[in-house]
Image (cartoon, rainbow, N blue to C red; front, side, top):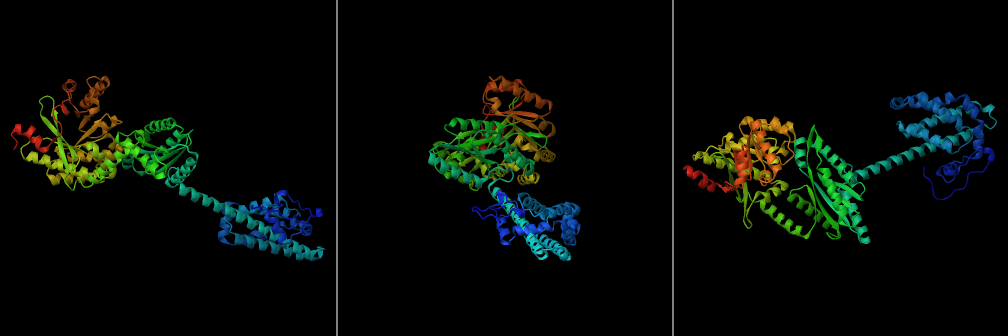
Length: 624
C-alpha cells in the first residue's frame, strides 16, 4: 500500500460510529478515498443496522457475486482450476457479514486486500470483478427496497450501502494496482539482472564487469589505494567443448564458476564471466601482492582438479594474468590490456599458472602481433617448408620412417621452429590451413621418394585437434591421399591424448581411419593425463615416449621406471613404441637395454630439409 509523507486530517471523530482508526492508516490514501466518497461515521452506523438482514440472506447475496462470473465459460474454468466455488463463497460470506458490522480497521482492510489478491492470483480480470460488484450492489439494494417498510431509515441506508460498496471496489482496485506494481518491479528487476549477469553461470557479465571496474577505479583513485584485475582463461576448454558438445561444455563452465567462487570466499572479489571460457576478477583487498598471489595459486590448483563428465575424468588448467592498479594502468583499458598480456605470457610458457604484468611483456606482445600478421600470408607466399627427422631401428640403424616437421622461413627473422608460431596459429584459427598444407606436402614428398626408389617407409604427420574433430575427417584424409597418390599404409597420423576425451566420438573416427589403412601414433604419451582405457579400446599402432622422460633418463630413476613401464606395456599390447629426443649414447643404451627398438633424435639426425634427407640417407642406397 502506498503511503504519503504528508499528514491528513483524521476522519470524523464519532465514538458511536464504531470506526476504529488505527495509526497505520491515519496517513493513508485509503482515508482520502473514504473522504472523497463521503463515507461518514453516520453511514457506518446505518450499515450496522442492515447487518442482520445481510446475515439472514447471505447465500442469496453471495450467489449474486459469483453467478455472473460462472456464466462466462473461461472465467468458470479459471476459478474451478485453482479452487472451489463453495470455498470462495464461504470466504466472501464471512467478509460481507464483517463488512456490515460498521467497523473498518487495519484487519478489515487487510482481509479485503487479501481476498482481492486471491482473485487476481487465480486470474480473474478487474473488469469482471467490478461487474460482479455491481451485481452484488444491485442485490443488496433490491433486498433493502423489498424491506422498505421495515427499515425506518430506508433511503439513508441505501445511500450508505452504495458508498460502502464503492469503497470496497476502491480497495479491490488498490490491491490489483499494488500487485501489478509489484509484478512490474519484479519484472524490471529481472530484466536488469539479466542485462548485467551471465545466463549460464549467474555471474556478472561483461557489461557488469566494466561498470564495476569503472566504479572501482574512481573510488580507489580517490582513496589512492591499490587493487588487482585478474584475467583467467581455461586451457584446453575448446577440446572439451568440441569433443563432448555444448551441453557438457555448459556443465563444465558451471562447475568452473563454482570452483572460482569457492576460491574467492573470504576475499573482497567480484568474479565475472566475459564470455566463452574467459573469466575476470576484480580484487580490492590488495595492500601487497601476497594475497593476490595466494588467490591466484588457489585458483590454479582448484581448476586442475579433474572434472567428471559423461562417466570420465577430464583435465584442464588455467592461465591467469594479473594487472595492478595504478602501477600497471590507471584506466580500464590499460588494466585489461595488461592483464591480457600477462595471461598470454603464461600460455606461451606452458600454461597452468599465473603471471604479473611487466614492461617486458609489451615487447613480447608486439613481436606476437607482428608474427600473427605475417603468418596469415606465409602459406600464400610459400614461406613454409617441411623438415623430416628420420626414425631409426636400433638393431641395424635402418630408417623405419620420418616425421614431418614444419618450419617457417620468415623473410626477416630467418627460420622459425613450430614452437614459436604454432601456438599463434592455434589461437587465430590458422592451424587448419597450415595443418592441411603440411599434410599434403608430406604425403606428396613421400610419394616422390617412393617413385624414386626410396625405402617404402611411412611419413608421420601431427594432426591438430581442429583437423581431428572436423566432421569430414575421413573424406579430408582420403582426398589428400588420392591427390598425392600416397597409399594409406604409408601415412601415420600423430594425435594426442587430449583429442580422445570423448571416447564415443574418438572411437568411431579412429576405427574409420584404421579401416582405411592409415596408422595412428599416440604422441607425447605419458605427459598428459593418460588413461589406459585409450590403449585398450582405440586402434593405436604406436606409442611415442615424450622427450621429457628421455632428457634425464640416465640419472632419474623415476624417468627410468616410467620409460621401462611404457615399453613393456606397449609390447604386451602388441604396439610399436618409439622414443624421441635421443641425444646421447647413454640414453640410447638404456633404451636398447629395455627393448625399445625405434628411436628419433639428434643422436642420429636433426630434422632436415627433403634434399638433405636424400643426400644423407638415400644416396648411399643409390637413390637418384
